[in-house]
Length: 221
Image (cartoon, rainbow, N blue to C red):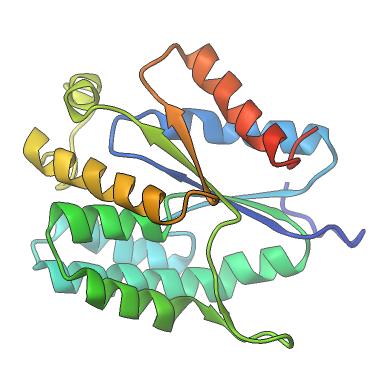
């Protein structure tokens, strides 16, 4: 699914967001297949991660003890490498990039959960994600963000005993309430980019809602 697409089709960047246990990862592969059926070439990736360097930084962020600023700096360092090595080249080739989390997660987890400075996160967002283009520089954001909205209490039930939790998954429900609130604020600030997916439904209904969100924007026929 990662060969070049050379028919002049514009690249498309879609991110998947939600608290741990919301079920977003379940639908990424299905959406990739839906795009492939329609002749698009898909790049699946994730954050933190997506490159050799970014995966090393991911391992540190998920396991090592550190303060919120250090977490944020490591995540944005991983994002910079990810953008340069994977996302921007894929979009330039006209690929569909499906990314499991992007910057909204940083504002949610470090900004909301860790209560780190939103002003500093915004500065890092501008610094790291600015793309130089012939028609003027811009800050790279997804064309569409699918936010899988789920009550933290339900997410905690889904995660219980599922696997050995990383340091974020092991946080109490109160932490995830702050994360969910931060996601909601990001959505309210940029409603045209977000599609809110009610994640407390059957898998089949959630998938139908995902497809509707894509079809409403004419990304899928």
